[in-house]
Length: 226
Image (tube, rainbow, N blue to C red; front, side, top):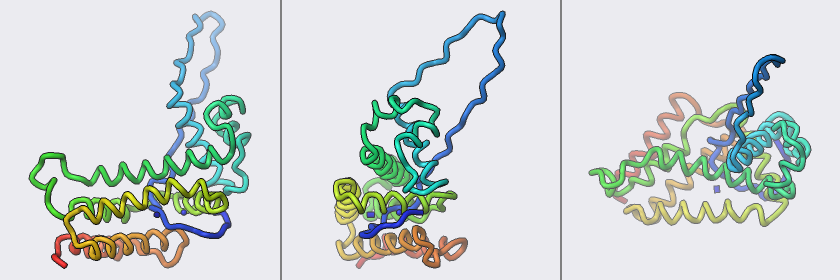
């Protein structure tokens, strides 16, 4: 699916869940008489997440053209070797950012799904309603720029588009298997794609009451027999 950087072959993807805050804790003054305490070591997963979040900040602030392994390392406060351990190349770093972006959208969908086994879990259109809610959730500052920049980078390297295409195919399959007519489910997805596209490229994106009204309208379609 489905993204400031230039490129061709853009693909629409969810514009929300692209950026996250990285909190930097200031160092305390050293006390020569105090016993030295070791700082807790990060796990590999925590270090990887730190690198990805730092890379996102570089892209949002400076643009994708300025994303390098050195820039990500400096932003994260790590050595370049520390970044290379997790991401041997710039393409692997971009691929990790794309993967994280897709995972955030998956988590947003899951947050809107009813509890498994509940009365609403098997109602037709359940996944479609969660998909609409996640797609139209308000975005955060910098998310659109990050999304467009990542797609620009991915479009220049076909292998980086593969996980986006796979995710889009899975979302489509989930919608079609949601108990709705396949045409109805696909139209709902394409409508959400249109909102994402407007968000990502600033094409008169709907906001406020209008955006909420669009979400209500699309949600109602998930309850209307085709």
